[in-house]
Structure formats: structure tokens, C-alpha cells
Amino acid sequence: MTTITIDNKEYEFESLSDKAKAQLSSLQFVDGELARLQAKASVLQTARMAYSKALQDELNPMGSGDTIQF
Image 1 (spheres, rainbow, N blue to C red):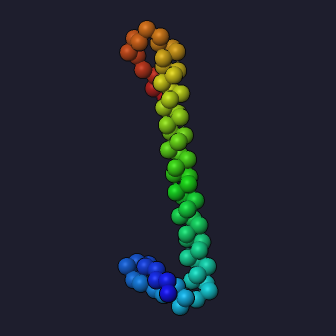
Image 2: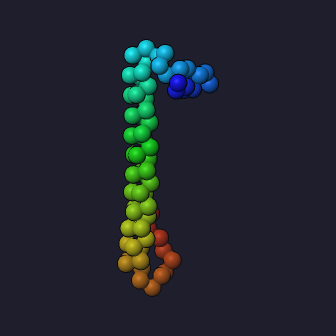
Image 3: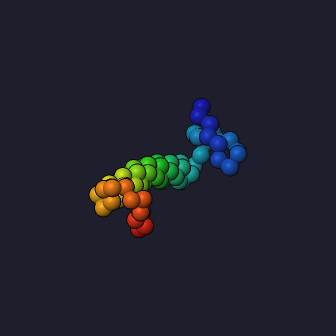
């Protein structure tokens, strides 16, 4: 039997009501989507930093040390 832990309490999955199983499924879906979006945000932030650095390098080819603030 599969046991799940919710709020530090263990439950037998098979003993949950259909509504509880549906809520658990929805919660797992939302958690997965949040993780996916957080990973995507990290990738986009990394790309933003790279574009910002490339723009700074283009605007200051001699490396004057000035930085651009967005």
C-alpha cells in the first residue's frame, strides 16, 4: 500500500476519498508547474544577465568601468 504524508501525518492513499485524491492530484500538478516556472525564470534571469553584460561591453568597448543600471 502507498502511504503519503500530509502535515506530518501519514495516510494510506487507497483509504482517501475520491475528492481527497482529486485534491492531491491537483496539488501535485500545481507543485510541478511552479517548479517548471521557477526553472524557466532562472533560465530567463541568466539570459538577461548575459544580454546586459553584452550590451555593457558593446557600449564600453574600452572597459571604462561604467555600468548600466536597469
